[in-house]
Every structure is written in structure tokens, then in C-alpha cells.
Image (cartoon, rainbow, N blue to C red; front, side):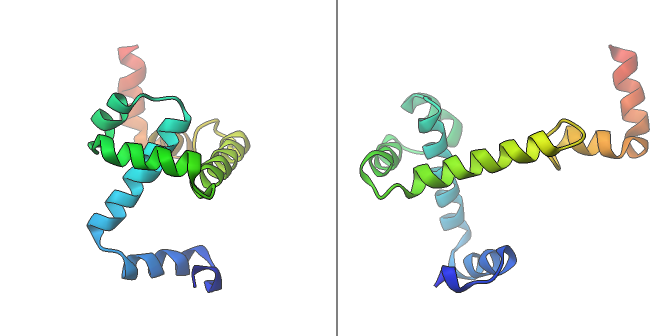
Length: 120
């Protein structure tokens, strides 16, 4: 059914209608746990950062290692895409991050930028 949706906005709206807020949070934490596991974080570090149980982390790891490859493929594709975006960014920062916005719109942050340079 998701494959029938035409663009990102339709997918986003579909999942907003389908999932409750707590389901969205839990799915987000599972994806983040999978990413951290692939980056080599230990269970305790993941538990402390994401506030999820060891059983959830263990289940995510089982899906990573014995599942159908969805987590791994999606995370790897996301990393490739964000790497391209970061490289293509003229400002050298991740687009729409706080640093990126400050560089893109320096006059909006003139006072803050002046205070930062004075402190250094």
C-alpha cells in the first residue's frame, strides 16, 4: 500500500494517520537503535541514550542479523544520501542544522555571531 503513494508528503500523511504518537516514537527509537548497533555502540550506551530496554535492543539486533535486510539497507541508503547532501552543501554543514542556518542567514544572527566571535 505504501508503494502506491506518489511522494514523500503522501507517505508522511499516511503514517501520521496510521500511527499513534507513541508508535512513531517507538519506531524512531528502533531505527536509531539499529543505526547505533551498526556503528558499533554497546547495548548499555544505546539503552542510556534512547531510554529503551535491552529486550528491544536485542530484538532490533536479531532483525538486523537474521531479518530480511530492511533495517540495514535503509540505514545504509540514508547514510549515502546524507553524505551526498553534506558534500553538496555549499556551506559545509548539514542542511537545516543550526550551524547551517546561521551561515546561510548571517544577518539574522548578527548579534549572536558578534558575541560568539568576541568570546573567542
